[in-house]
Image 1 (spheres, rainbow, N blue to C red):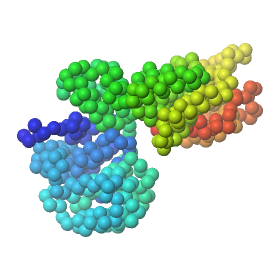
Image 2 (image 1 turned 120 degrees about the horizontal axis):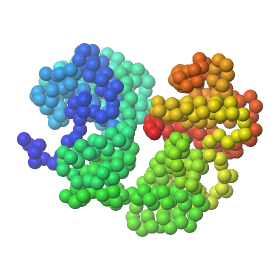
Image 3 (image 1 turned 60 degrees about the horizontal axis):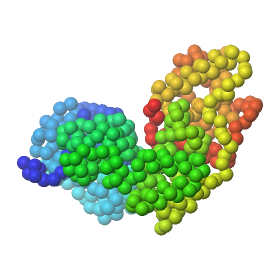
Length: 481
Ligand SMILES: [Zn+2]
């Protein structure tokens, strides 16, 4: 075996070779397997999703499965000649094109000529075009002509991290799949398996930290693990090694810095920045870490879990918006340290917002009947959380329930237009859960007719922040408590 003494990156070695080995993309994988099994193969597929979640791996497995001489239940055998060649990357009929570096019309023209030739050795010629959104308009137009009259023996698999940049004319000719970010637990599980098989000595804590840092991209997690393993040799990998090698600040530093910002301690924030700069930490990564941590706290706050005493939901959402703006500015700045210092001071010493009440109902002197109503509402919110409908939960917490004879009415303050409108999109689910908890057949979503007795202070940016919050949450998938 030539591979034995060839160095192979861990993530390549651990790249899934069969559909069943792909982690967390069940829907896509099942559909593709069924297509292979039934022989109903489309001419073009689009795999959209974040980086590092398995787009190219799935494309290759599919290329193998459709060409394998001995497939079982839609899976490639990985033993036959053609499977082996595709795995090694030297099959003549599986052509991988990086859309980012082959953007132009010439490459696509060449491709258009080539597609007309029958496959050299396989059943199908498979073109895998990665980052397809990078193609120029001319190239897309040329590609479109091929997609309009595809030769029978050709399959296109497009992969993209930015499907919105792919022309609709292309997308409409593809069977499209959206791949998901992996939850940290699954990444951690995979890392454990790799460590056991590869005899990598790593503390459980560092695996958790890597899984968290990888933000849903399994490949990134495996690459981090590999860097750490080669850095430490046979010695045990500890959590601090991760921060060291990635140029990251430790979680404690991140938390301390955020507390300084929230607690109006600009001086402390500057000390931390100085310390990070002295230790050669990457300040942009540091801001990413701040954003991540803030996001975690926002989710915790929404879920009713503990957040630092300095924080509450509205403060955190505001901070998150400020940090996201800072991230954009920092990317363009020459003097990153100075910019970070100035912005940290600005954030820390901004006119403090009035102590915002935490989003729990006021203990009221109202009738006990009201109490039962609030209990049901809390139960409803719990059910929604249990159903892992994080977005719906976030929308509901701003609403006020009113129990009517035949319906549950969910009222919003006029400033919550966005929440009210967004909730409409989840009406079907909502009706189902309301029926479950309240036993009521209908749901009304409406503006409150009279403003609440003590309207909550809201700054102009409240709507924007609410959107930002929901986007952040939605991007990260539904919340898992
Ligand atoms: Zn095979």
